[in-house]
Each structure stands twice: as structure tokens, then as C-alpha cells.
Length: 312
Image 1: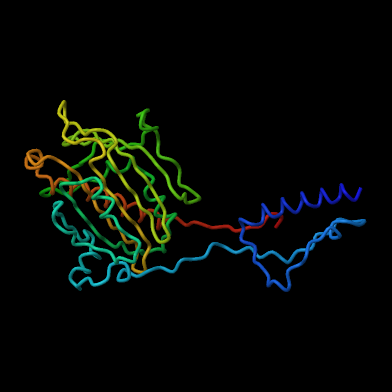
Image 2: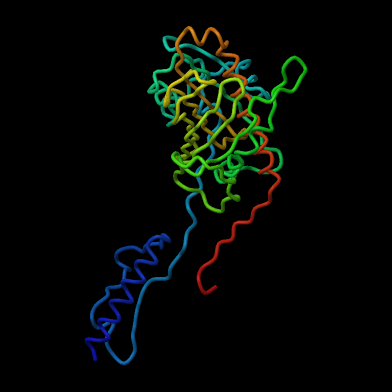
């Protein structure tokens, strides 16, 4: 009988440890820690002695300021960042970027873009103030969920609204390019996620994009890459894996920081015929407007986070 009770007690202890450890139970000093022996489980009643459990929420990361992430900006340059359009810059592969984060910030979009050996790069930086409530990474993640809405954002061209994309949709996978609906808002933030997208661009052809979302300590990165050749009619204008657009978003004290860098490779004779830099800027403008509007929508959503313990 004692052997059976010992086996049952050990099983219960093992199950309790598996359940408790992910919930960050508070430890006690070594001298106060109870010693679990065979006698603890034997006797007329099953006895399990343990210190009271204190369940702690995940630590809250203190928001950084804009100056901590991008130090040394002049007043005029910073004023442009805080404006609706933000700061923009374009350069070619042998030139240097204008928008450079602090080396210790943990942000390095340039290295990932340059892996594609691009001929042309466009960078942008804007800070979107929060008016109704502060937004966190889950809010930002949900703001980027509605891919189908991207097509609804025009640019103003000489007083007229021009729609760059006629269709923007998710795909089931890279092989099965069947359109699928956008998912419902998420309750939990994933560490990473991959999605497949199709943008119909009447000026540049169909864009088949792979989107990778990753979460870091302070922010969220959205990396878009073309996983198929880009063709206009029967002509291939860009090979697969030669375009990338990386968008980094971070809640800072001044609002939501949006920093993007896009690069692509096109032969020079093609780039000259399509006026590449303005065309890239227009498409980045559409993406930024979609993101900013998505953040505004998230501001108006009141979310309740309920923390509970089993049995309470």
C-alpha cells in the first residue's frame, strides 16, 4: 500500500511541476525551501507541502523614445518624421542610407535588404501618434491582418485618386494559389508567421509575395519577398527573390514608429523605362497608409485582458 501511495504521490508531483513551471511560480530562498522526502507521501493521508504560488504576468518592457532608436536627428529631420508623410529617401546599391538606427537598437533592415543584391533601395520613417489609447504589439499585429484592404488605398496624383493595386489577397500556400479570406483578429501574438499574398498591379504585373512576420523584444518585423518571377504580359521584368520590403514597427513614447526599407534588382535598361524610384515610392505610400489606418482602427477597439487562475 505504501509503495502504491508513493507512486501516486510522485506522479502527482511530476504533473504539478509540468503545469506550474511555465506559469513562472515565485521561488523562495534556499533556507525556506521544503524538503520533499518519502515520508511526505506516506501515512494515512496524502501530504504535499509547498510554498504558496505567486503567478506573475510577463514583464512589461519599458517603451523606448524615438531619440533612443534614432539618435542625432536634426530638428527639421525629426519634424518630417513626425509629419503625416514621414521621411523618405532613395539610393542605389553603391550609396549609403540616410535613415540609420542606433547600432545597439537591435534594428538592422539594411543587411537583410542587401542580401538580395538590389540595384535600387527606398527607405522611409514615420512616427504615428496615439490619440485614443496606447497600442501594443498585438494591436500592431492585428492592424496588419486585413490584406484585402490594401487595394482600397489610393494615392493622390495631380489631384486625382489613383489605385495602385486592383486586388490584394491572401493565398492558401506557395503551391496552391487559391485566394483565402483574412483571418479574424488574434487574441495572442505569435513569435513568427508566414503567409502568401497576391497583389495585382496593372502597371507591373502580378506580384506573388511571401510575408514573414517575426516578433522581437521591442517590435514586430514584416518582411515581404517575391517568391515568383514578376512578369508583365509575356515579359519577365524581375526574377523571384529579387524584391524585398521590410517594415519594422515599434511602440515608442511618441507613438508607433514605422521604419521600412525596400530593395529590388532590375536591369538598368528596364529601370530607366519605368521611372523606378517614383513607382516604388507610390507603392510604399499605399502600404504605409494602409498600416496607419489599421493602427487608427485598433485605437478605437477596446480590449480587455482577463487574467485568471484555474478554480478561481
